Image (tube, rainbow, N blue to C red; front, side, top):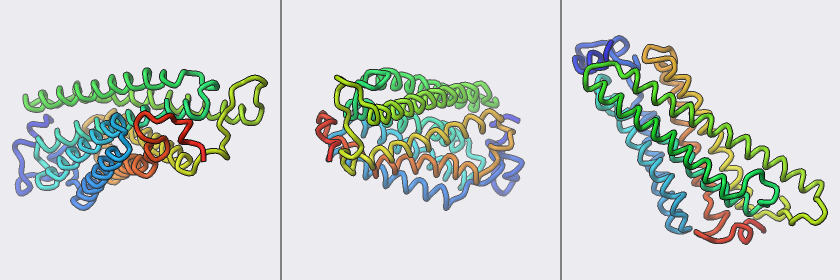
Length: 295
């Protein structure tokens, strides 16, 4: 059945939600309104933190992520009002698919300064290389998801089921999962090298900042950065599985799983970047990380 047939010809008093919509449920007003409000609050805090700490690139990424999430949940509230709204469906499927890529970019922007502060000598990659590798990968992922969303919109407006658009969005999400997996692997490897360098320092090697010398804000920053990364990864894996099942798949019809594995995971990541804001741990703008991370 095309999205046109599912959405354009129905109203709540004429069609069954379970039989006449792609999701086969009416989105929860309480859950989606709560998530919208939480992202709005996080957005306000991020803007204030960005202004205070002058973390312009990081703040731009998270602000774009928050705004896109808000648009997505506004679309889901439109679906609560009218589950057959084609505009609401397209608005939320595109925005909520794309938004976490901005939070992933914010994480990638932080890691080069972390490596530079802790000990660049033990990293497999130069500090700047993390940004040069992962930010373009994120752009590719975001571009694929955006292109898929645009094609889905065109197909839906033409009365066709947006299968090819969905497939392109899945490709973007899968690329995001692969990028995050590589990023996590490199971070874990760096952690292993860091610990080995602490236990067995090499003669003549540069000094590595010991864990006991790290300031409490830096410990919190690392913990929250790790939490945000894991949450975005879990959410991205979920969305690949969900969309891969197709519009008639079982997972796409499960609202509880969507709220937890999409909504809760992403707002946790967003809030973690508030709590462990890099400005508090690394200092303003261009401050040298090594000068800030030590207690």
